[in-house]
Amino acid sequence: MNYSINETAVRIVEEKLFPHMDALGITACTLPCGAVVLDMGIRAKGGFLAAKYFTEAGLGGLGELTYRTMEVGNQLLPVAAVHVDRPVLAELGAHDSFLYIDWDGAKCSVAGPIRAVHGADPYAAPVPYRDPDAKKVVATIQTDRPPDDKLLEAVAQAAGVYAKDIYLLAARTGTLTGAAQVCARNVEQSMPSLLDHGFPMETIVQACGYAPIPAVVDDEMLAYGRVNDGLIYGQETDLYVDCDDAEIERLVEILPFRKNQDVYGTPFETLFAQCGYLWRNVPRRWDAPCKVNFFNLRTGHSFLIGTLHYGVLERAFLGTNGGN
Image 1 (cartoon, rainbow, N blue to C red):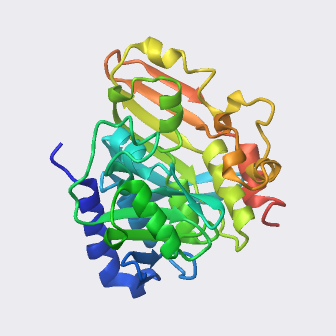
Image 2: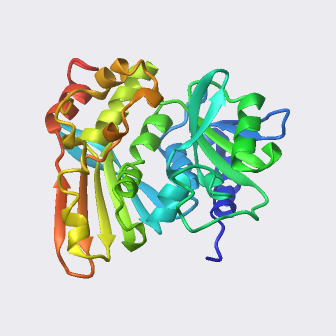
């Protein structure tokens, strides 16, 4: 494939972000190690357009984030809608947040096309694509702490690049940029689970996904709970595949989040608290999609797996967990 997802992401940073930082409500700084950190929603305000570019850079230019609405209760909520070409590469190879880094005694996860340079983690490694020749690389992170040299040096070592060549896009969850870019991980929510279950990933041709964006709240744990409610109870992915129907049919009971009947219907904030607010303690089976629609190009058959849980969405987004 004669295409560099890092070079494309770098163009987004240099052409869409740097010239318009004031308008986008973002800032940038160069660390002593030479890495450039773009604050898109830690101390900076950010917004919908910042989230769009954050997401599209994270996808290596292979996807587009737009916005629409959905009805929850008696309210219209904004929805992050993502359309992705080459979804296995864009998501598993770039957008997924599975490059785990030790940072001052805690683990954080890094995403973005930097992961495709050498296949730096267990979900980028199976993707038959590498991007080793890009002069600069792009990473993204969800954090409420300003990234420092320790983090960037650790990221560089894990990814097999030089820290001075990294653009790092950062936002915390309790900002519009942060909330929208997490909800834009709606296609991403499906891909690792499919890989875990042995689905033939090479048969996925196109993908698009949708997830509601909650009201922003300046409480990182509450914000984290809300956006993850949007993903496990309100996310929907459409996958266009070319495979035997049997490969899809076997996923009906084991793919969607509703398989977790012991916790299904519980707000994610409650589940996360049970895990000590540490993602490493969250059972892998909980990191599952809400609803996945398969459209089989080979057979012409459609399969709708999972369902949206409007009750949880209404309570989490509009009820006592953040409203009236």
